Image 1: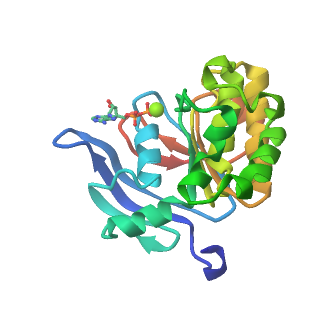
Image 2 (image 1 turned 30 degrees about the vertical axis):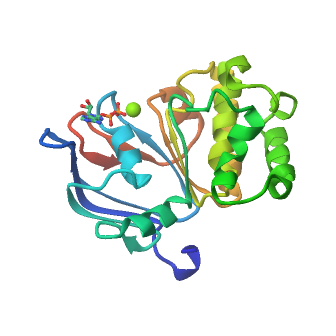
Image 3 (image 1 turned 45 degrees about the vertical axis):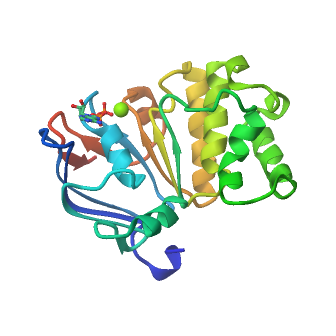
Amino acid sequence: MTDSKGHEVIEFENVGLRYGDGPEILKDVSFSIEPGSFHFLTGPSGSGKTSLLRLLLLSLKPSSGTMSMFGEDITNLKRERLLELRRHIGIVFQEFRLLEHLSTFENVALPLRVLGQSEENYKDNVTELLDWVGLGDRMHAKPALLSGGEKQRAAIARAVIARPEILLADEPTGNVDPALSERLLHLFAELNRMGTTIIVATHELNMLKKFDYPCLQLTENGELNYG
Ligand SMILES: Nc1ncnc2c1ncn2[C@@H]1O[C@H](COP(=O)(O)OP(=O)(O)O)[C@@H](O)[C@H]1O
Ligand SMILES: [Mg+2]
């Protein structure tokens, strides 16, 4: 959608963010992300990692500065166009957000159903992806019966089933043991090798050391450094 046109997939210029009349959470944030790259987003708790991901997900708009995604300045875009762009972005939320009344298969298929595809159409894709993340034998189970790691992999499968160009993950390894978090990171690395642009928010130094990806670092007062 954009790579061929040669611009950055994400570009922030002096972006500020505040919630309502509250204090400025993000201050003068400028950075750009090339298509197909992998970045960590770090910073202490409360520094604004989740807020920055909400901006990237187009569910919040900056209070100041300019921000473009896929080469389009999003600050004045209509809601309809924002929703279109939003379809090219997948997210793994910190708390999974799986729907409890749906099976694992149905949860992962949901983004495709929303896009209007029929089960006949997506059944093989969803099954294949569930196999790939190691949930092939759990696809009929509801989330309540899944372990933390299985829920996490289901959330990742749902985030990538519609082949997003950008994948965001908010502390995806926060609730799983070290061995599993390393496996999850390998899964992200593999998606990245297939071309997906990835940003993973984490404050786990182990992960940062083990995987040598560049880091966007938020400071305690909401400023951003490249590291
Ligand atoms: N919906 C909101 N309304 C008001 N303040 C918020 C909201 N969400 C987050 N904040 C505040 O923004 C700051 C950054 O939070 P957050 O983005 O969640 O940081 P992090 O993910 O790095 O822990 C915190 O001070 C938090 O209290
Ligand atoms: Mg957070």
